[in-house]
Length: 224
Image 1: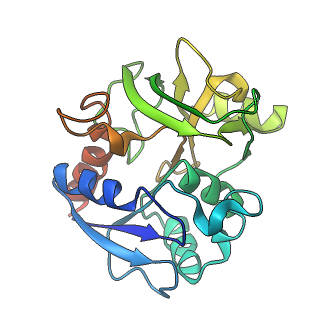
Image 2: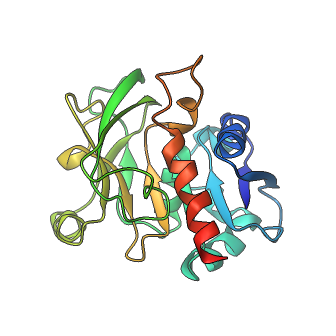
């Protein structure tokens, strides 16, 4: 299964994301922000980093990159897309996901191993987990607070679209402890913590992050 990983100017976790795809059994395909198509991939990861230096709202410039036009069309057609950290911000700016990510409530960059609870194991990116399973993956952000109006938050809760929630401590002031959400169809997922940094035994917090990538590889295999 070919999984594209998009590099924007300033991306820094694209190589890690590609490695995570490979370790999960997929074939990573490097995509450039200036590309006009997705090179025939089956799914796409928007990795973390600082696209365009985050000189405006995070992700607000990246959403206008040429590759995003093809990606938005593909996502609306059902292609699995995962946005991690800055990728989550880009998905919100592109209106593929609701809400926005704002500066951490304590106004500081945070880097820590973070416990999450998987609350929706029915998406293309979380099917390898059990509902309510708790996992630990690294988190590193300065603008990771998820916000939305009350009506949107209520809809996310009622429709089971909160994919992951912070457990133990809320590291950035995200409303209702939300760490990740999905769209109505379940093919687009945004996650603030970094599962691509928890896929090898010798590095990071363990192997808990590999399930996100194994999920989409299995989902694509089931379709074929």
